[in-house]
Amino acid sequence: QVQLVESGGGWVQPGGSLRLSCAVSGFTFSRYAMSWYRQAPGKERELVATITGTGARLNYADSVKGRFTISRDNAKNTVFLEMNSLKPEDTAVYYCSCNYKQQYYWGQGTQVTVSS
Image 1 (tube, helix red, strand yellow):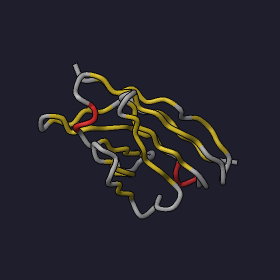
Image 2 (cartoon, rainbow, N blue to C red; image 1 turned 120 degrees about the vertical axis):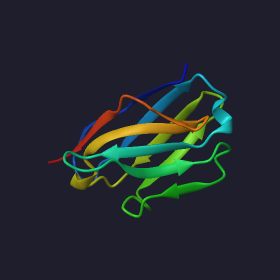
Image 3 (tube, rainbow, N blue to C red; image 1 turned 135 degrees about the horizontal axis):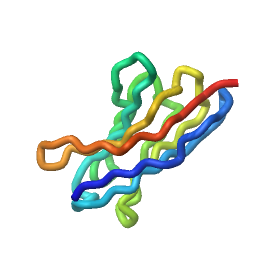
């Protein structure tokens, strides 16, 4: 059974930092790309960052380039999202996701709130 469990969200002031984690189980983690998405109130879910199975290739949404870093620890079946220089517009529920055997799986999400 595929499971994704996010953690690390919270409240932070503008300019602050947070590190999100997503623990994964149920498949051979190192073989699959992982992604972080976010959804702000009243908006569609958007792709934030993707990392390949080996971690060799990374992709980011333009809105987070230079501020967010996606990484993974294949020994611990965990993917991370390091978020720096946070802005109020980064406020959203953040989800990790994978496409395993042509089906998308999602975690329960973790709330990130950026405000003063």
